[in-house]
Image (cartoon, rainbow, N blue to C red; front, side):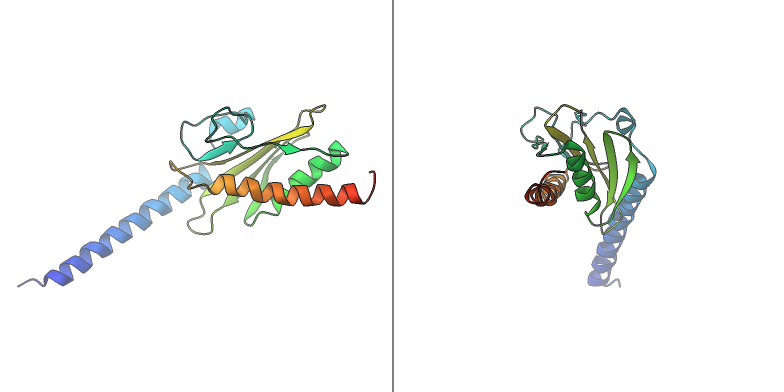
Length: 166
């Protein structure tokens, strides 16, 4: 005779194993497959999913404010890059004159999210986009990341402003 509680425990264990295996595969996919739209440097790209925020998109659910430049634009750019790189588990992926992309890995499963900034000389803002490579929803993680970057950026900008002209 089969023990029903043993079968239930086994079934739950197999479901948990399958879920973790699936998440592990998604994590691996996010680390090995770089989306094509990143090569276009298009911060207004809309994946159609609620797993990103951008300062260059009209959808209010996915819109975030750009980083406001005060003082020297080159210093602001350096402060923006530094604010991104201060994010835990973040590394530079692409660094060009007025475009920067970093990859941030989640603590569990190593899911990769991309943070991009672009500055057009003459603008008083630095545009920003943070997006998840896989999955449908990010549960607000990208919006939260951008706000943390914004806080670090604004603190650095305030420090530069209080120390005089650069």
